[in-house]
Image 1 (tube, helix red, strand yellow):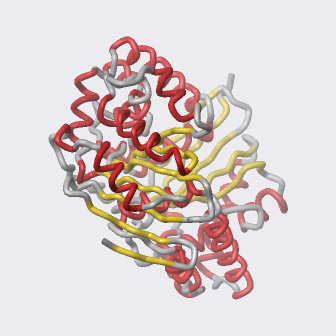
Image 2 (spheres, helix red, strand yellow):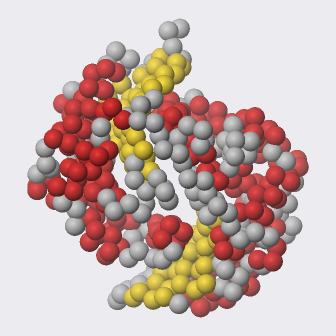
Image 3 (tube, helix red, strand yellow):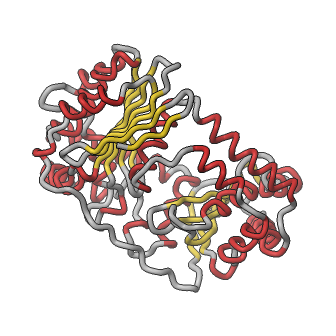
Length: 420
């Protein structure tokens, strides 16, 4: 049992006899609870022929259980003013709900039912395959979505980190009920799961509810071993795609740091300063000063053993070279010249303010709880995170910039208008 308290919140953690971890943050001055059931499985845990199954399973659990029909699942929490949803990432899957505090037992009952009693009905599977394929096509029709998928593929060639989370149409059409049941058995064991709740929740009551609702004997596996990505070749990759669109899109970047890397906070500050928001350097230079783009930003992704850094821009087909030069110029500035104290302080304030504002959202707090437990095995207090942000220096940022922002090591994807 672990505790961390402040005047207004209390964090607690219990590991059940089954191995399921239960974490909670009690905020007594609200009337709602956000609760999520997390599984330590995502698209990187799939092989080429099973790519997309984690995301498809996320869809299918809502399509009927032994106890509830599709409509009854939809009405179960909406009828009491709550809502329920799910998402899949490269490394994690989360099924979550937000309800009034008095409805927490109902939320736990429904979520546990989805994860333990889904029937994966054949007719529902065929219907949902069509739905997910339409979701896939929607992404292929959106150049900004499409370019990020291709960017990850060239960063992690021949590795599951380069697979799209949604999978492929060929795989989706081939999935069977047995594939889904096998995936549950392989990756939804109790030691691979976390139940996280934030809001007006009593931890001991939450533990009782989870103990009563989850029956780990139904799972035959307690976890899995991840495949570490191969090191990329030093030579960058370039890919060009032609689509019947009017604007050109560009995404460039490189493999970054893992969530455990000692320099992840300097990179976090660097990314915010470079391309996060209207005051960032890329926005001010490319959009405000040169008028080359409506949308331009940089981004980072921290994974368990690696990461991604990149920048994106959508611009006129004849301005791609100009935009690319400006992006590289801003990256070179960060390598060559230390960030001023005024700009560093402003960026830190931006990051800290965004984090603190997120505390007003119970779902955001629950997301921090669940992801922290899966990534670190413990809760990382916001005060500790803010202190790490405050501790970032200009010298450390410049060192990170010289390590990562090397043009020769960047991979680039272009989506250009087709000639027709």
